[in-house]
Length: 445
Image (cartoon, rainbow, N blue to C red; front, side, top):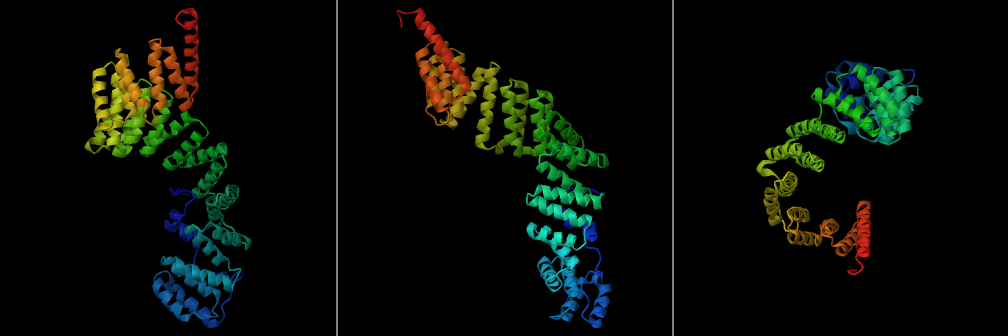
């Protein structure tokens, strides 16, 4: 059983795999004990004469069969014609003939099986279940029938039924890895992570080079909230050269959350190399995290890579976001004049950029230009979405200058707009200081 690489809840890969189709559909023969009879010796003779050209000249076989068919022909002929249409890729006519065969002979097991196969392929899962279940009732249980029944149930979110079907499929066809993958998917959907991980371990022993299995197991470990173990899987994918950009960004996030900054940076840069300009947004998000952690050097490398990848084609909003991040790092690393230059460029481009206004306010506050800082915070506080944060920054500046009543007023306004526990604690602390200050200065109160 090789891994097709198909998701167990889709069917396109099965349909494209000639080995699977051959295994599922079997030959064009018939089983006299459980199938309809020929209506006459002539019909049987015609059927046998047609047999040699069915595989080699399906179009010719269709032409002859259509010419021979009558209103009261045996369901066997409808079934054969359906098979030929299926072989030629004509699903609509195939279905019509299979339905005719079942109408003429309701217990026609192979016709039910082919209808089930066809309906799964076309995503008509409810009808597929009806026909595949009938095949099993008629004694036609085998690995492929149960496997496809699992596919149909899984796609209808009937995960327990899917599990039962896949377990039966594995009993009949233990070598078919797709049914094991289907079982894993149904277990994951039921949040039975330990069982799915054990099955994945089994499959990985048989298929250590399967990127798909390493990826699925990594995802399950993340769902189990075991990021460190998931990172091992994603690193294996990297070594196999099979880690896509999304996986690399996820791996970078895990390394960053575990404070492995150098590893995170390495993986993010690799993702940028692989994904190009499409990864700008995700890279800036990572750069924001580095910036918030005070990892200025790492943030700087991501800025440079973003500029390299984005080039002149970088969207304006992305360019402004990058400029803002660069100015934050410049402010933090003592290069305030450069930060101010960048921020003024942003504000000139967009006077309603509240974040840039607040950063300029931070700069002026840092160099003791209180009035200039207050002016920027007041401007930002008039912009939708920035009112609360601008009020808090303004209040912090006022507290430094012991202007408690005005600071308290601004903090109350901020809390009304956007209640936050940490700001509430700050407000209460300022009120206490203000209270003790006025108590110790009764003349001034």
